[in-house]
Every structure is written in structure tokens, then in C-alpha cells.
Amino acid sequence: MTEVTVVIATRDRRAGLERTLRELRGDAEAPATVVVDNGSGDGTPDMLAARFPDVRVLALGRNAGAVARNHGVAAARTPYVAFADDDSWWAPGALARAARHLDAAPRLALVAARTLVGPGEWLDPMSAFMAQAPLGTPDDLPGPSVLGFLACAAVVRRDAFLACGGFDPVVFFMGEEARVTLDLRTAGCGLAYCDDVVAHHHPRADAAGRAAKRLLAARNRALTAWMRRPARIAVRESVALLTAARADPAARGAAWQLLRRLPGALARRRPVPAEVERELAALAAAEQRHCAAS
Image (cartoon, rainbow, N blue to C red):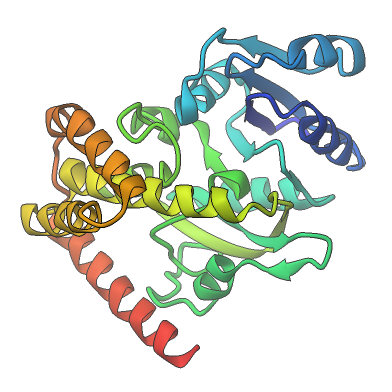
């Protein structure tokens, strides 16, 4: 796969990473792969050197969160980059199909894959919603237009991703896709859901972890809103988290993190144009209808 490089950011997930790399090698032509290690203490770099000598390893020596992927994209020498996590991988042939879509659609900057979850391969709810095409399907895109993606199941046009700054340190991790999405759309790029591009995701079952991630996502929605959305929306997202913090000690921690990171978000504030806000409003209304019908 000469046109696509797979970039994986990892930290202390050696066993999962090994499975991901072995699954990627199930393709007829294994893609070039860059693993960015976020300061693992479990011997991940040594395992990679011993078992996957063809994989390029960037050992950061610290936890850079989602920003680690930017280092991998910068190191890639292909026009397209596919992201994977240490619990996800691409189906055979998926990256070749993504590359063909990107070759054929100059405005297309990101392909959001159909994501199958777990051994049962059930369709990820986000994929199911994207497939309904709530924003329509423009003639110059290979699938429904989207305003979001899963970082473990997306293929990007390298130059467009780097031009928008990639993932940023303000949100750090969880929901880091939102600001990238808005910046790509603001630049006039297209993002499309492609049903024929398939990724597999096997997340760990962890109820306590899910609760923590929900709070982290709430914090990062507020931070992203301060960076790119109208003030009224940023205030609404912030107030929701601060209100929850009154009764929930865990939410208090997330609220404190929000306040600590707020200056960084405000320093990066560039509200999206009205056209993109209208798309966000249309998407929110479609999500409400979808939830009501579920």
C-alpha cells in the first residue's frame, strides 16, 4: 500500500498493539506503519524492535495524548494517512478503497470508515447515523457528508490535516476529532462516510472507564466550543459541566480541568463561519430525531 501510511498512537497497551499490527499484516500488501509511543512503561518500544522491525517507531518519552498522532503524520511520506488505535485495525482492502476515493475527489480530505465493533462486528452507532446522510451526499464526494469521525477509523489527506494543525493539546484526548472536523470544513474540505471502507474496533469493556470518558468528553466539548463555536454554545456546554460538578466529585475534577485549560482554548479561538454553524445545527436536529426514533 504505497499511498497510505497507518499511524498509531499508543501508551502501555503492548498486547493490544501487537494484535493490531498482526491484523494489519493480514492485508495482501501490508501498509507502511508509524507507531508513536506516548511514554510507555511496559516495554512497547522493545517489543516493536524485536517483533516488527519494519515499523517506524517514534518514542516521545512522554504522554502527548492525541497530539502524538501529529508526529506520525508529519513523519509519513505518503499523500494519505490512516489512523488506528492499539485496539483497532483496517479490514483487508479498506485502505486501497480509501485511497481510490481520495484520488477521485480532490475536495475530499477525510474518509470516515464503516466501523465494526467487537467479535460480533456490530455496526458502531456513529457509523449507523452517518449512513443516514443527514447532511446529504454532495456530487463531488463518494459518500454522505459528515461533520465528525472516529480517530481510530479515519483516513485523511495528509496535507489538509497538517494545514489545519492536526490534533491540539487543549483537549488532549477524547473528542479531539471535533476541532479538526470544524477546521477542515472551514477550509472548504469535504468529509465523507464511505460504507465500503471498513475498520474493526475492539474496545475494552470497562464501566468505570466509560464514566470517566463521558466526563472527559463533556470537558472537551466545552473546550472545543470555546475554540470554534459561538459564545452562547460555549457557555451552555460549560454551565452543564459546572452544574454537574455540584453533586458529582468526579465531575468537579473535570470542571476544574476545564477552567485550567480554558485560557489555552481562548488563545486559539476562531469561530467557524455561519455556513458551518448551519450544518452543525442541521446535524444536531437530525441527531435529536434519530434518538427519539431509537
